[in-house]
Image (tube, rainbow, N blue to C red):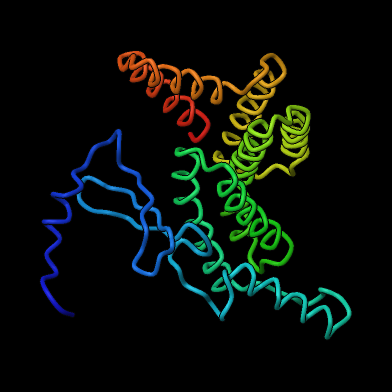
Length: 254
């Protein structure tokens, strides 16, 4: 390794600011990467593929690798009978889902709803695979207890994408379908599941009500007001609108 490993100069060039801690930069090869400034360091995520940039078994994710294994098993045996995800394999999928979780929280906060929908969709697919094929019931419980939350984030992100495209009816259908799916979920005997199920239903119903009652989403309305305030150089109002936008995004994420 050439040069000093001391990062002090880098940290001085990008001081920690809780209101401005996320940025997308160009890496040396030209690809975009996501950086988050923390009080004592920096996290960097790939925007596409796995957040850590790894390609397990030559695939974009462990999920893809296990899905291909399942397809080969079915081709060779005529059915999925006998296909099992061991505890060790479950750990690989769970850790991958956790990396996606960290990334999609930031993506949601900065309004990248398409990538948030992608990452939450990945984690929902992990839930489905684990639900059907995990060897351990405890492994199933560990991840499926958070399925209501993942589905809520997925539905809200997809609804936001639809609203940005002026597809109010599509957004309504997405939210209604998510509410129905959560209501039909088989209960899991953990406090996390009960809490996330109730909270997710409440947030989805609240969002659905806002979609039905307003011509644009609350987030879009605030963003438009922010743009107007900046154009008018009304920086005090702009600061207030930024706080309201941040609070609204955080409300959905919690």
